Image (cartoon, rainbow, N blue to C red; front, side, top):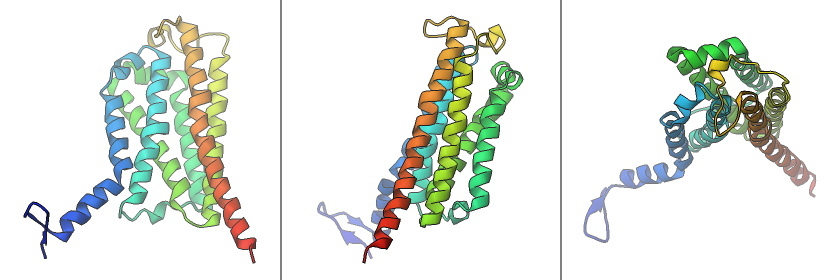
Length: 229
């Protein structure tokens, strides 16, 4: 039945519910906007020849857009219970994320993505898939056991991202071909590669560490609540 509004117009309850749902799922829309903002930005062209720009684009997808979209999906009415973190799904998410990140930073695949647009699109899509999988599986569960498994997935991702970033930042020589690591932001080739490694080690690993610690805190708070008389 329509509801009379202040201006005399009528609005159905379903319209109000739809608006509330849109407001409630604002992280989803912000994440999608962030994602397309990254993919339509100059970073795309710059990342094809500068490693640090590639890393900014990569980290924007997996540590900003992906968690926002994951939170929005969990707030929506979509049934994503199949993504709750059981032991197998937590292990699979961590393993898939590590495979995707390390494989695309191998010289041959990184250079292929920089030189060929279809490979670049596949690279970006796999970064998004890996990021969404880890964040959604880690935070979708409500139980203490699921939170513990989510913390495991988060902290494992933190470790491998940090490890790869450190390896890149201390590399004594250029790992990638000179034509795909020209440099940006005033950096020479090797310094640009090292700066990209620093970005991954610090800003790539840190969000996952924070997420993992938040889940550990959830587990501990539930244990404390369970011990109260």
